[in-house]
Image (cartoon, rainbow, N blue to C red):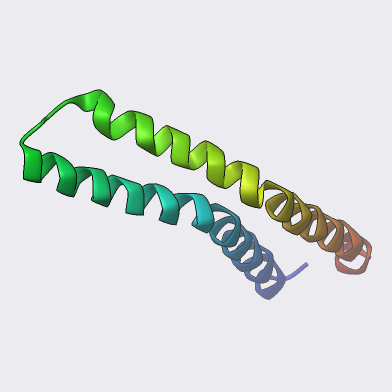
Length: 89
């Protein structure tokens, strides 16, 4: 196994991590911005008002895209495990 293959595996792993985490991160970011704008407009600075909507949004997003995320991760792991014999041998 040479350095190019190691970098390729690392790059594919980072790409998969970004691809799988992106939906939840984007939704939580958007909810956070909306809640912050509402807090700034009403001058209500309560910590739970920013935390609870983010958690609810993350759970709902996970429920919606969870099966897709699991499918992507399983396919990635299968591809990685199937390439082990060709890389080692």
